[in-house]
Length: 174
Image (cartoon, rainbow, N blue to C red):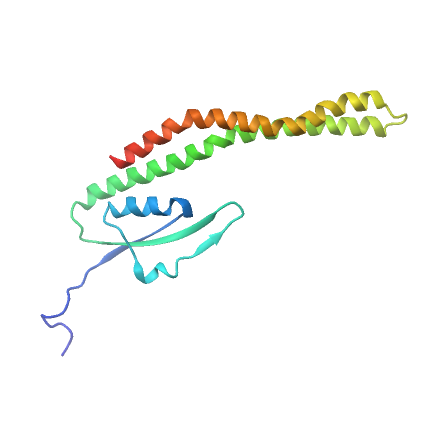
């Protein structure tokens, strides 16, 4: 027999997509993409690579969808809107701490500059101990204060940005 008999399954063409995401967002993305007709590609799931970076664990998720799905144009438009919202949520999550980190680093660098001035004052000929102490005090404060500054600014940013993130989640769920 030539394999074209009537009793065999008909061919189904699939389109494939690979999404790389943090492990904590993987289930959220999987649920979202399933709404657009995507399903996890079981044959490749065991070979999905997990890349370890210095900051977080990222995982590749491989998915497939029937090419002849109904309303493909509308699904593609909604899927792009979903991806844009997910990207905005990621940016908003980073914005919670980026301003706080920037201010903390600036204050730390200023503290380091004061400490360098203190060291130069004490190593000068003749050593100037009074100037050394006057510059060391703001230097030490510049090293201690960034932690508290970071926590305070990050808390304020979190309170400010959390409603925006929730609005994006609401937009995704609609």
